[in-house]
Length: 115
Image 1: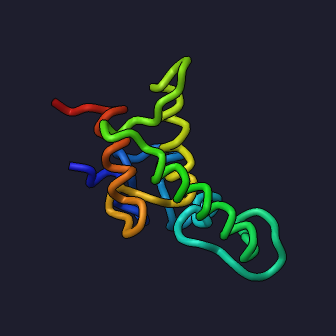
Image 2: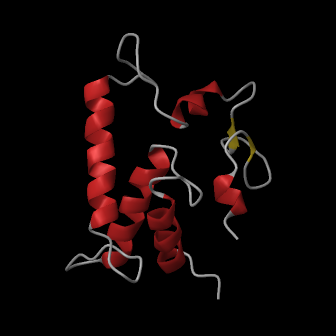
Image 3: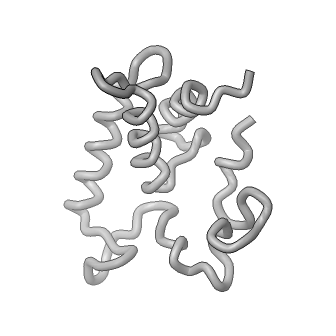
């Protein structure tokens, strides 16, 4: 069901500029998959401290997700849920991810229902 979101390298969503991850020509997106720790901090690089902060934030989002898969906010829960999902995607998480897959899958279920 979430196969389009669990493919990392390769062509996502049928091609075109900006949708290819990995491979030649789109190296900008290569750093989005898995932690990139070490070297000088910069584009695509993380320190142990920054990666720890990101993981702590993702755990907080996972632990504060509502039972229906959304993230509640007094003004706009749909926007809040979309932003929470964006944080997971920016870290390279998918519905198949070991630590955050359940949260991503449930969030997608509420944000993009396929009933």
